[in-house]
Length: 208
Ligand code: GTP
Ligand code: MG
Image: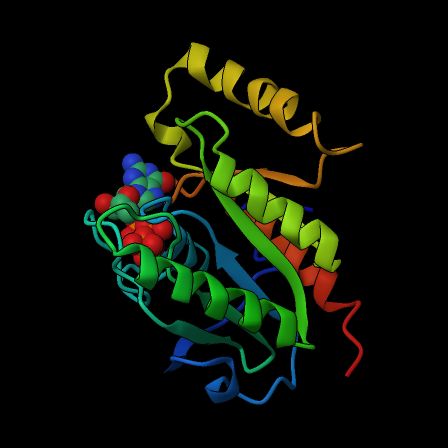
């Protein structure tokens, strides 16, 4: 494997497909799909753009609550990336937040082609109850997920060494073992190859 050469995990083109307010409006589930989930502002849309290698494929914003619908992106006509609204944003009414949590769970529950949920965690923030609760729900529902730590470019050396062991310690209070972990930065591209390799390998497990 020579560095710099395009690996089999690399893809050619990513494009926006559609935004859906309801799971029933989503594209036909005829190919493997990966959903990005996490609290508002964690960096879901930015990570999607980083993986896609396109700056403004998914809309990002420093104001939380930017992504409001279930957004499907096609990659090489062979798999889907899905950008979801964030949860836990305090400025959105409780009713609105609960509605979105319900729609998100209905979506995750109903997509038969969903290979894996990418659970995004801000590497600067200690483990949050809303995230741990959400992972507990995925565990109970039998949804496979991986942890994706975001914004690691913002950490200093000491923080970089600390955040993962600290998170593991919290998580292992509830789980027997850790799911796969990816350490990423949408700014520097760190973690891109690892995530695309994972997706490429997981695509190989897809059964229509
Ligand atoms: P919602 O759609 O509101 O749920 O947010 P989101 O999770 O999609 O977050 P988004 O990608 O819009 O990013 C939120 C803010 O964080 C933006 O200002 C991004 O530029 C910034 N950001 C995201 N990822 C990174 C990263 O890896 N490094 C740095 N430095 N900033 C990031
Ligand atoms: Mg977003």
